[in-house]
Amino acid sequence: MNFRLTRRLAHALDSGTFDGLAGCDAADEADRLCALLTIYDLWLEPIERVAGRVRFQNHPAIAELKIRLEEPFIESLDESSAWTPTTPADVSVDLRRIARGTDDSIYDWVATSADWEQLVSFLAIEGGPDALFDDLVALCQVGIRGLAKVTLGANYWDEMGQGDPTQVHTVLHERLVEAVGLVAIPRDELPVPALQRSALNGLLATNRWLQPEMVGALGLLELQAGPRCRQVVRGLRRLGAPAGAFPFYEEHANVDPLHGKAWLDDAVRPLVDDHPDWAARIVRGARWRAAVNDRFFADVHRALGERSLYVA
Image (cartoon, rainbow, N blue to C red; front, side, top):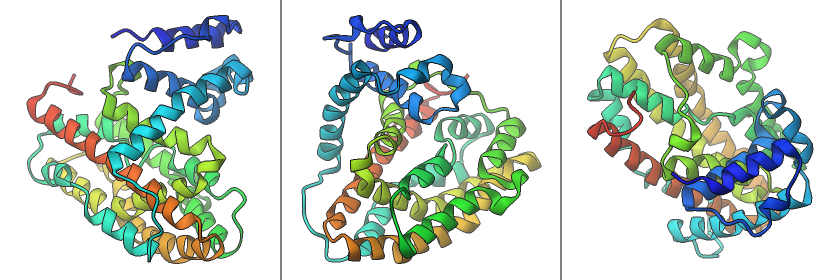
């Protein structure tokens, strides 16, 4: 693939010379998304991984490129989710309807039919109930007050293992990675649906004006994660996975249904009561998330069935 914009961006961040970015267009959608993800790394990656690049996070050339790449990305999200600006009668009802309307057949396949190689490949690309979810929740609650703030804070505290460093959800995921031998897939080898799914998180996390959409997208994730994780646990048990593979998905299977209910009742509802104009935008974010997930899971399911992608 031709990642000319992504390569030029990486060179600019490493050299501190940004003249080459002006007017540089992406070769294709994969290049655009990889460039966006490279920018989002400056906000979201552990600081030691971005090293000296992080000082250019708000460089005018980076800000210009970020906006230039995000505008068509947002347009594509609206088009793919068939979203039009309306005011929902009940945001919680709409979010539950969106959650029920997605295609989770890949999780049924994981539970009942996938072999070990396919299951491990799926876990490597799926990333659990989203990588960096703790950081996303932390950013989502900035500036929020009252019951909604407390609810998102309680969710974050669960992500932090309720104060036990050994039970932090990212630590549980690291144990899963070690137990089953998950291998990180280089970004430039991922297909467009996987890049879109990752880029959506970065879009929401680095744009404060999209906070309502972030509430909706993360709320949908919480609604869907519990049943999906139960199916993964079924698949792990069926295939005799090692003990270290279970705690991450078992924890999410147990707590995320509670998180989903609390997110709707004690975060979304009071936020909409205080900010009625957020209602349609919260639904917009949930639709974005559902659209990128449906495309992503359909692509992964096809590829794993054909053993044409993601399998070493």
